[in-house]
View (cartoon, rainbow, N blue to C red):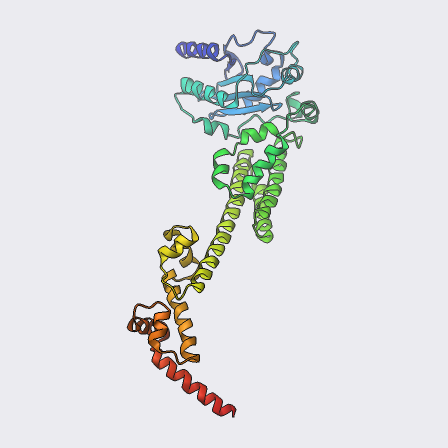
Length: 402
């Protein structure tokens, strides 16, 4: 244990982040020089220690207080609790004054300025030293094991007093940045959302919405579902589909039993709405591509047509065109061209006396025999048989009419 304390002391001096290590009964096992006694919030506010002793689990977790102050904490296998922090995790000139007032300190404490990511790395290293268990930083940042407080546990509780005090100079997410977040949904930018979704940023920039922390997150995510629904509709998703998806997530949100599950649902919701937009745009792009392809084919049935030529004209790869055309029409592009040429040939056979060889040449068949073969495969008869049959039926129809 002495070796472990030695390492902890060196880590504290290297980072400037205070450490408190308590036994399961609340007795101090290790106290770093990160605070003097007069600056130590755990000494001035006895109930602060009790919150972490009751709430800490074996998995390290981050706790944000007043949106600008962060702690990291965990419990080892014997029930001892390690608390790292507090640190100032974002620029806020009044944060230390509010903190001092909340924890009955005579003056603002000298808090180290560190990001939440830094704190996660710090607590992961300490966890390895004390327990020989390595935890990924991303697992720490996604944990919902923050202390759950109530009105009886002190001024750091999630209460109305804290709400009024904390939001006077609260740094909200700039409107443009908030709009940008939902523009990624409207653009169907799924990969960007997967890569950049940051729940810590959400917690830091969303003001207190309810006196209960669980309700606060529920309201926050409910609002996000509404905004994402509107963004998806703006991105081209049919309203009935968007609203049905919204209803599904609202029902799932109601069933969430922890903040962690709500945050996972939030990310899944954002990705799903963006995916709907992406799929809708891909569908629309396919429709436009196929219509352009058909129009070009219709205008050029009398010229040589190939997959390569049509793809070049439409400025797409032949593989993409072939895949999208088959998906849309349930037949290959080559087969579609043959069917259209046969339809045109049928009209010539039905309403003119143009020689079959000329029809074959005009529609770019390599020979009359090739034309006959393709015609029979599609219609079940030869061009000559089709012409005779049509003329007989036309004569018979006229006779009846007369």
